[in-house]
Amino acid sequence: MGFRRASWASWLAATLLTFVVVAAGSAPATKITPAAEWFERASALTNIREPGSPPFHMKVIFHAYPGMDFSKKGKPSIITGDGTYEETWVSPETWRREIDFTGYHAVEVRAGGVRKYSADSDYEPSRVLMMLDALFYPVPINLFSPEYGDSHENWKVEHLTAGAIPYITLTRHDAEMNGRWFYYAYAFLPSGILVRSNYLGLITSWDKDSPFARNLVPRHFEVEAMGHTLLSADLTIAPADQTDPRLFELTGPPATPGETMRPLQLFEIKLAQYYDPISAFTGPPPHGVFREIIDRQGHARETEVIDSPEPQDDENFVLINRTKRFYAAKVDGDPCEETFWMKG
Image 1 (cartoon, rainbow, N blue to C red):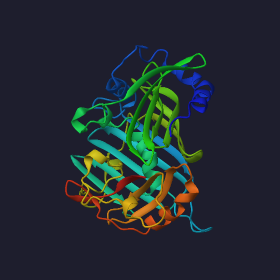
Image 2 (image 1 turned 135 degrees about the horizontal axis):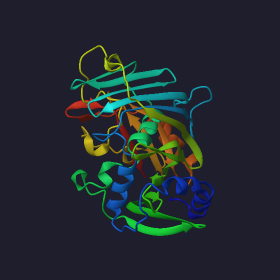
Image 3 (image 1 turned 90 degrees about the vertical axis):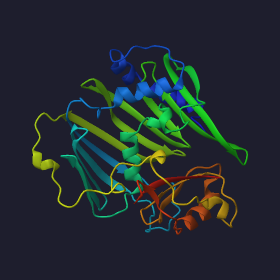
């Protein structure tokens, strides 16, 4: 597992000149040692939703791909296709988000101290959550804030080069199983701009950054696993100096804590019951990293292999686990959707 350094270096050399040009006047290129400071700086550079930030209208056009799907022909289990995400943001207390994706439509608004949510399904598809994670949480807050656990600790910081381009990697290995270490990594330019992450084999890359107000916004990002593109997205953003108040109106009661478009992070939710599908599996033991969505009723959705030395050997586990049902996770006591990771 990992960035596979030869391909990682060639990717940097081929694509990062754009970042170097954009970043030249955006932040000082200083050498920082503590990992948490790298994460915090990268978050600050791209956080356009802080109090006092200028209003904006954002549109993301994305395409979702199946990756490695073991389903029968004509019966895909990974929802794919074209989608759009639009957000109008005025302040942390006034915003609207809307998404359309292959028959799924959802709207979430916040105004006047009330958040409302409407969707034509209580299940948010896997690739939608993948896209929103890359958009909202390129650097999750638990990586630099001790308040949310110890994920900010035990990172190895390295200063490297790809050709003439310097970059910094932060890596961490956890939980050795079956002779394999599970791997997390982030890569930054010296200015602090995040360019790539690897979460257990799920690789996200951001590029074509351009200034917006006092921040930088990546205009393109992609998600891949085992050489398969899972998601490709292009983003546009513009000031929203004038907005119609009716844009932030939505009929219906206030949303419950679990009714949200935003992907809930693991440190925010409470699992109703610990479950370990890999230990309970009666077939040949899987040796990979798997990702699935547990919906608000506890159904497993869109189980897929993210990283494996022999992914074809994991087909049985993936297909069987898609039929499982668990207790749903909860946020503030309310059932919620969860992105669930399995390692074997």
